[in-house]
Length: 311
Image (tube, rainbow, N blue to C red; front, top):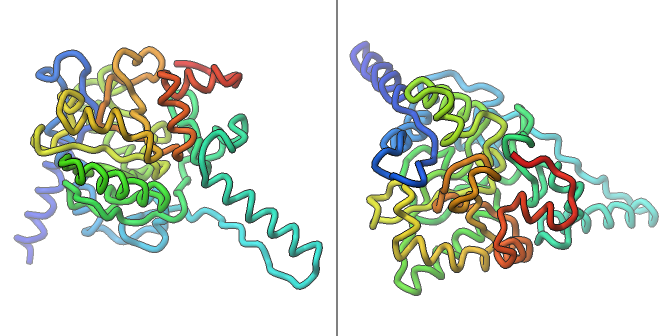
């Protein structure tokens, strides 16, 4: 028993040392720090949690985990009280319809408000616009597509995004393109550990280019999945963009509500290097609109007349 605990503890410490972020350098994949680290980092965090007492903010495959998953501070889900009175019933119905719209496609949203609403599909998350430490999305579910790492937390997405991901993977497979999901939802606490370890290994300046600080990661929204393929050994690398699978994703992801959030040559806008694997769910209409614009999400919002800060 002591030996087992020693092995588990040693394994956890060693793997935490190689935790990385899900990003790589745009120009020279060979010099990209953290590629091997990412493989084991997110996976290790789940093992670590299995050996720790459960916390109220902890997420794995826990009902409290809802959409974003790890540090779960349960979000207050407003439930309208059904009554028989006409006015109240009508108000509640209007409220529900408005919520449905927020889970639908982009252009129907009030972007000015929704980019600041963590629960909206259109929420803007970057180095200028961060999520609350206690934010955990609702309706987190385990994705039903091929995955790479066993950590249950990162196999999660918000339900709408998970459904769209499966639809996209199925469509790709029909065309002979096989995709794999690597890293989806990450809690605030998980991102704290990932960034800390990445900065420890590569320095804070490098970490800030390849990894997001806690609260600034789109993964916490539950609307992101990093995808990969066997053609790049199931790794996250800029080489993915040159593969058959990466090209298919670039040309078709918007039809299923996803955009490549960090395009090539736009790090001065997005704050991060080229990540052809990082897919952000916006809903079909908004994603298609952003794709057609040829702009980053930040640039698109500015073009739509929103006064937002750029990197």
